[in-house]
Image (cartoon, rainbow, N blue to C red):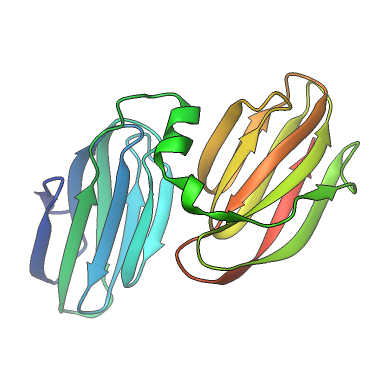
Length: 210
């Protein structure tokens, strides 16, 4: 289906009366911090990366996260009624001057966050899946430790949080919202950081090691 296409600037806001699905586009760079807001009316918005990966679906409010790649991002907005008012807002930070994952983690100001006591996940030391529920205060991080073997893949899934995976030597291997995975290149204990938002939350965390 062909949608009307409208461009949004990096600090843009568009208000419109929608009678059909509309595609909004903007250019983003890997490592930029995005705030996407959907206000007014009854609309559903889906955010897609340049490669087509879905980052989030919003019905109202804001989504905040780090862009995983450079290119043209798409926000497809569906009116939930025959006609509805809608306001779409995009706010992009300046691109980070250092592009490594470790720099991205540091530049996200996580030093302001508090850390809970680290927990060792023993139920997946060989292979398998384990789940637990964690509760975080505002701006809090839950560290988890998972013992891995070379050649395995470590995958972590949780809701409404950002997840980081660090190697036994402290190298940041992955940083992403809600679902992240990393290839295990050396034996040892890998650290998983479950990073909360600026409000308290409780989420299940699924650890999959294969």
